[in-house]
Length: 516
Ligand code: FRU
Image 1 (tube, rainbow, N blue to C red):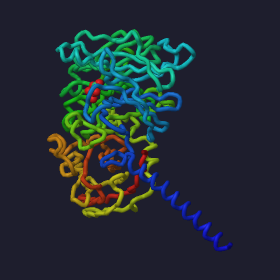
Image 2 (image 1 turned 120 degrees about the vertical axis):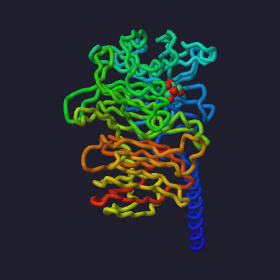
Image 3 (image 1 turned 90 degrees about the horizontal axis):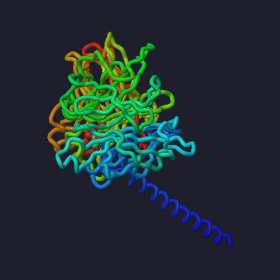
Image 4 (image 1 turned 30 degrees about the vertical axis):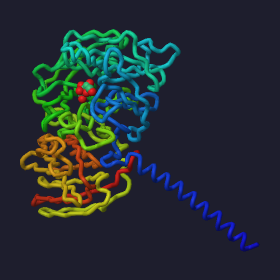
């Protein structure tokens, strides 16, 4: 009896174990399969499959952050554009949604924005709902092929169920084209002072501002930009918003303009202007171009509408038109930057736009991968740190001259150099792994000026994901974002401090949790 009982219990335990093991294996397989391809970003947004470029329609409504994006669902290279869609409750973890907008008879769906029409100015709501309205560019391929210049127009679509389903407006397009070849990327916001909607779009080498009472009828107000700022390429993806200058009650308006080509390190980049908006047009006293990010991989970025606490949060496309189509990923192509909070700083009489990861990103930095350590004057130290390829590194120093090198077992390196004696910060990805898929990717060291980094010390936050690095210096006064494709994960950090007086402290190296 007893023996039978014993065997019975053993059998149950064994079967149970096996079942458990089976379940665990299934779970593990799912974990391993999902978002675990080589180079798949672990804490950045990327589409499950196929091609993505610009973020679109960034809007918060009813507990949900929406992220729409330029999407071609049939291939890993650019093609007829749709609006892909994802949602998040914290801007960190994302849930994929069905495609929101498909091309139609007016054309492909290029970049644009979305607003919450709280007062139902559009009249789209008939049962007390709050409409979300998307405003985007229609790109008529046939018109372009036929050599016409009026093939880009602006259209709108609305959703009465917080972005789940969308209906195009039957009166599209809402802004026609009188013969401007590059006429696109409308960004709309509600302007309290005039109690109207304001739309900014780009028209070749300048921006135009429109007003509307209802999102359907638009009138041109003013223009900005000819002869101002950088003009090495066509202007794209504008964004206009007010910000309070830190530590004061002064409000300035910021105009973000993406430009391709013509960025400081080649290809695509994002410049900004700080000035005033009088309800009709934007003006600035700024004479020199200013860049939101000196790295090569932050393009077409725009900010969220309707964030409850008034924060201004920015997401950019982490790529560059010079080589976006050629990067060595197979299933999907491209990802977004981490969401960044924008702020305005006044230094002397000059205004600077800073961008810095939102707190939620810090929340992913869990366990420490290494203890803090100090590198004395003229010292070099090296640490092997497993997991470095998905980490947040924070350091601070009064050293004026140092470098941090990320390296793998194959000897591939990513070298960050502070050379403030010569007023420059450098990112060298020339030997960072796969670089020769396109000649513009690994052909030179990337540079940023350091003059704006006033003060005696530097603090640096470095976010390293499987195929990117984002470097934020002094709270985001100087930022560089770059893609990298090492053949093996980086697992060694070497810090060389060339300064003869000051030491450097690596405060922490923390593992970043995967959000997928
Ligand atoms: C910017 C851009 C936009 C355009 C979209 C097309 O990267 O060229 O100007 O609307 O991409 O996908």
